[in-house]
Length: 81
Image (cartoon, rainbow, N blue to C red; front, side, top):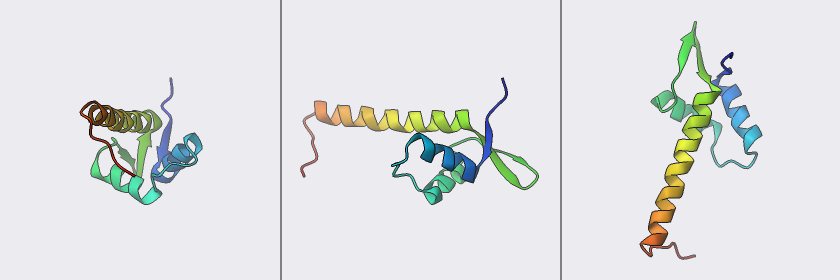
């Protein structure tokens, strides 16, 4: 199977296609990538990443947020609006 490889801008466009109303901005996504939270590699001066790694990162982050919310609800801590 061929890896789905994209540059940062293309990877962000992929995220927008998956969730058009995402709160993640391109600038924040670039910061996440540059911080090393998503593995990258370079060919020449281009920073590239695999879309499978992007998907895994988003699932991990979403899973952590969901688990944290469930734990807070179980403990009776709720955000009041």
